[in-house]
Length: 339
Image 1: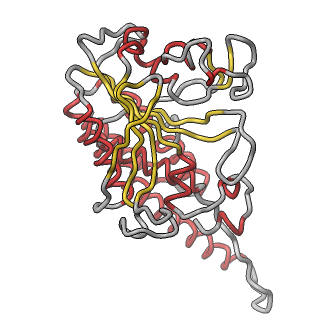
Image 2: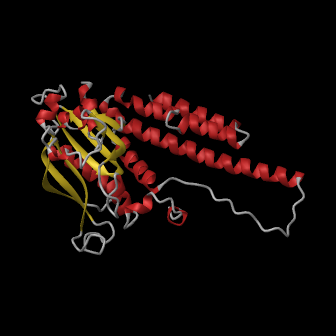
Image 3: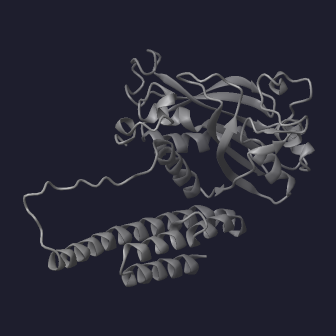
């Protein structure tokens, strides 16, 4: 795997060096950095890497990505300068005309936050997986210990296509699908779009995003869950961040907890952002319920695991101190250009 990463890095550098036009450079970007590019294929193959080697391999992939992006940035400057020089030679410039300001696009704040989340967990050896947005009731509810009479299955709360198919209300069905394969150990995060029948306001939307995390192996304890989330919080929000776990209830985890972090604006002293408490709620988590393990074909007497769910929009709003979720989707250039 290490040799393959180095091969990709060298091949990308050679391809970038040989690119003569922006079109060629875009092709290189898609081939190596795109969703179906060489680095993405490597990340999808992390399940075949020994668990103890995954953090190091994840770090090497991140370093290779950064090196390729830096190389591309340098090549863009070279191509643009060459193009400008050629244009100046072939055209007569009217210096009395006003200049043209060309704006380039950039990543959406949601995508920036998601990339940061994935970077941390990939560095800890996690694999990024995806699942269908149109899901079976069995995966969305039944295998997650949510029976037929549970309030979450009310048609007022969930978008049903028919009695067996719906728009998924969480990314947790991905954990059921992964566990059903029986491949151990499991260490994945599953980002994606989810749907709930909510009215649109400053903090709610019928369509939003979650990042599900799942670890299943022998000897996994709540201490592993706490250590994992502490590490993520420190890398994502800052090295001085502390976490607090509060007892809660989720049907698919037992015991369950809500997780707070010290306010990253005031450092826990209390301010408007944390409503004077010094703490901000960021996610829910817990140990995977033995019934969920059993229903997915895993022996709870042998294996244990933990799961957590991060609301991507909530993290984005907190990270950038945005007070209205609707701003993320209104495509107002005055708002988006701030990022």
